[in-house]
Image 1: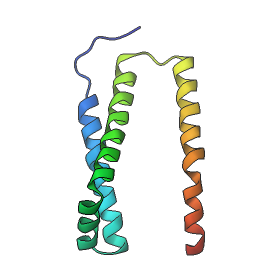
Image 2: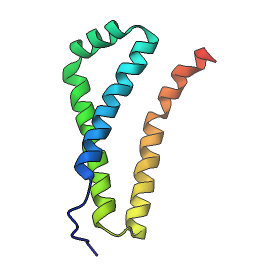
Image 3: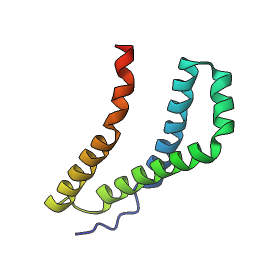
Image 4: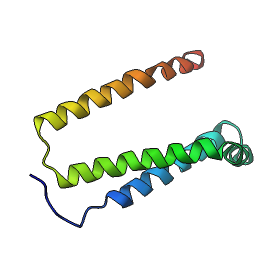
Length: 102
C-alpha cells in the first residue's frame, strides 16, 4: 500500500547527507594533514568528490522516500539486508588499511 503524503523530507535528508559527507571529508583530511591541504585536495578532485557526494545524497533521499511512502514488507526488508551486507563486504577491505596503526 502506497501512502500519498507530501510531507516527505526525502529531498532535505538527501541534501543533508550529501553536504554532511563533504564536511566529513574536509574534517578528516584536515585532521590528517591541514585545512589548506583539504581545500587544495577538494579543488583538485572536485570532479570525483562532488558526484560521489551527490550520489550518496540521492541514495539517502531515495531510501527516505521509500521508507516514507511504502509499507515495509518482508521482501523490502530482506532486499535491504542483502544490499547492506553486500556493501559491507565490498568495503570491508578498507579496514586492512588500519592494521599498521594498531
